Length: 544
Image (cartoon, rainbow, N blue to C red; front, side, top):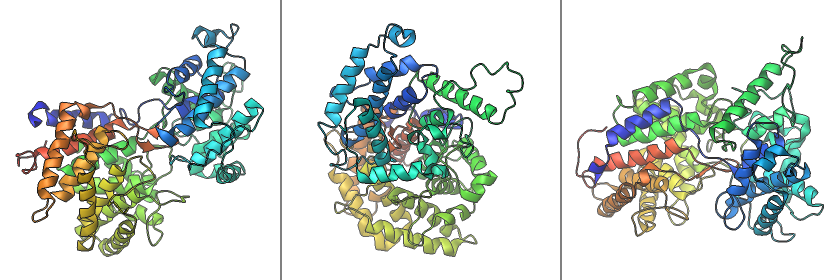
């Protein structure tokens, strides 16, 4: 089965892509693209973004993911189309938009169908609960108000919690570095705000937030040749932001992705998957060194790594990087993690209202690795690891799985929590680990795959890893079943070429987010680990 793939070559190719920062995030986001249509009509690709919105609708008229995941991107797209109509852009006189084949009638039809699908009548959008994506209630409140203004009626009724959160954001909450990610919800007053400091031309990893900071007019139009203005404070930052947006939209031919980058997430998670699977250090050396340099920068050494430059540092990316590097012999002080410790669990970033199970699982992996190494902070790490393990155990669902705020699939959270508890939770958590294995076995599909609501390569890889890291254990009654199920999962990945992608968006941002190289690393790690597991692949030889 494994002979069909040259896993070693594919892993090396993936590592090279990660080092070069290719495909840290891929695929357009209807939410972010809709916000650029409204906020930045001056930006190159405006007509193509409108065309993309019309062409990317689902059969029911919505945009985005399934179920509740459609609400945020659909409202963004609807508000954008209504804005285009209000500005009179879809007319014969509006050459660029008209030339793309967009008509006012098509825009009205699309907006009407979407509204009927996502909110029939004066329904409360929160009746079924908000989608679990980031800032969803605030976003719904802002877009609902804007759409109601366009329609001249209170057609959409957001939750009171969303309206209260939006009011706090607009009252000054946007000045908190993390909340600048939602700058597009604030209004015209944030254009050019000196409190906002773009990094590499981008505001907090968001094209929409960057567009809001730039404002609705083409930045510095006509100023380049005017004496005295070229050196004006802020001009260089505005030009850099405009260039960043221009380059980002060009990459996808108009539309833009949910994050401008998630490079450190892609690098850290991928390195962790491959290192834990036993891929050789020589193969991973370039990625190891790249991530080490990022973690050794003064800002990261003090507060930890962000998901990408310009985002606030977070404990999740930091913990995954610390663990992955420690597996390869690069040990760094876990000091940055302590600022996220609440005494019971670790927050991902501040402010945070809902703790993440996967983040705490990754923190447990980092602390456990450090405690096992016997460094100067080993005792403190061991005590914190025991606290976090207990917290994770209490958050297991009745069926043996876990859920997490940062990912749409229970297979991601279950893999993270089960592996962390198996490695560093101690014998007191063996029952939880076995429960996760049994849940994974019970939810495999007839074709060998896993996925909720539909099978995916990424989720299948997480399930296979759960079985191989936690289920193949001497003396356990799940060993034979885990080996058979893992082999069937690998067959699904290989025979259907599912390992190659494309990988659907499953991570939570303001919209669902795909991180292709991270998903690819999870799949390749699962396959390589299976190949070298005697009960599955029959090959106990070396790694890639």
